Length: 155
Image (cartoon, rainbow, N blue to C red; front, side, top):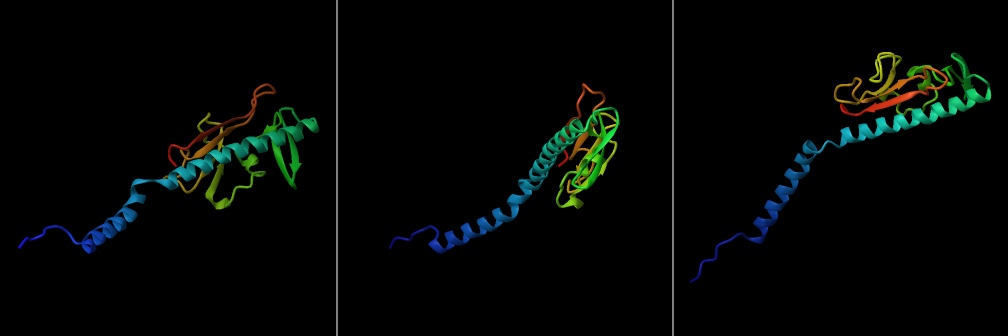
């Protein structure tokens, strides 16, 4: 009589199911999709900042408010301007629709462009700070426009 050695089909299926469960629970620990998502949000905020500032500049130009100081009102909100662009990140955030608003903190100073740059940071980062944020520096003259820099290294 010949003795067969090997695994039964049920044993193989049980092992595959166990491996599937282990893989499903362990995979999120190796793939940080949340950090990538926060980085994408920060880049989106940078694009929104650029677009909103372009709108503010156009309104300021239409009202001859392109000097060293000025202001425009849009959607019932008055924004302080410097050479036609938002004065700082706090002013620029007034016209942004950041949702949910609790995910973002705005500071008039502390960005990575220079010490006088403002920033909008994402609060969901592992260590919220300037490394998951967009720095904003207002225009410094009529010929130098506003600057933006997204830092997603800490997202």
